[in-house]
Image 1 (cartoon, rainbow, N blue to C red):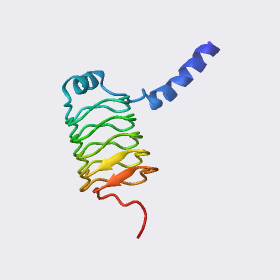
Image 2 (tube, rainbow, N blue to C red):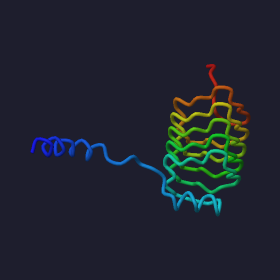
Image 3 (cartoon, rainbow, N blue to C red):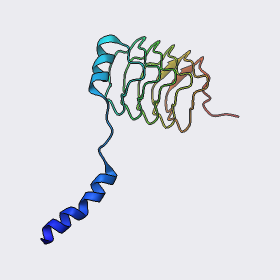
Image 4 (cartoon, rainbow, N blue to C red):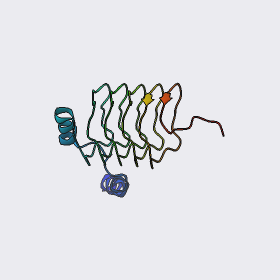
Length: 142
């Protein structure tokens, strides 16, 4: 009886914590096979080292995703949620991040030439050793 009481006492904690949110495997497969996944759930997806050149990721949820060393050249990420995503070493030239959420994103060693960032939310971004050119992201200064 005592063991049953302890077990039942733990149930509310498990219900509050809930399952960890993860990507939709069908959406990951769709992106990798077609290069398009508009409004997809790619939360916490491991897309490290992928070649997503010109991918359509408009309005996609990539929060917490790992895109380490990925090639997103010319990708359309307009309105996408990339908060807390890891884009270390990613190639982001000519990508469209207009109106995207880039808050708390890791862009360490990323290359971002001529990317569109109009209306994007860009706060607490790690730009350590990032190469940024022709993109309206300020790296310090007045």
